[in-house]
Length: 149
Image 1 (spheres, rainbow, N blue to C red):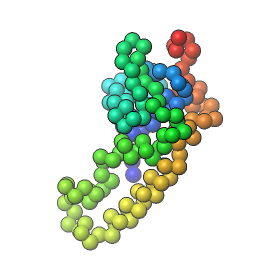
Image 2 (image 1 turned 180 degrees about the horizontal axis):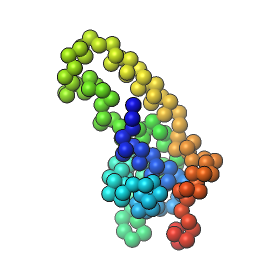
Image 3 (image 1 turned 45 degrees about the vertical axis):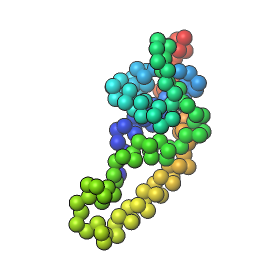
Image 4 (image 1 turned 90 degrees about the horizontal axis):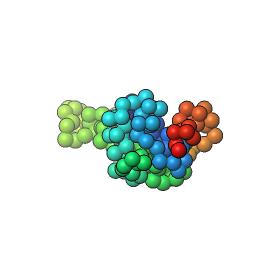
């Protein structure tokens, strides 16, 4: 199993917002810290805003903040929002499935069970769990007071 780049960048962006508390952060700062392009970050931010995870503000002093406290955002929720359109296996999408044995294959049920366990584990972890007492992460992502002013 491999996460899409989009979900990976989304988690970095959310951690960046969480580390920087109630501050409005800029897309360019997040992209720089997360080692991605501003265009890709803009697409990810748009998806996060669409799913109600971040609040965006336009204009000169614009940027984004978390829409809810980090304790209320689970990793499972984020992954479900961003990975839901990507079928795990060909047989998971009835419209494009061409597997000749999918009607009697027991692997699909096993995979569904494994994916359910995967998401159950991610549902136990909040954004706050990822950033709380993580001093190394804070040093890497915390905005300098000079840039904030």
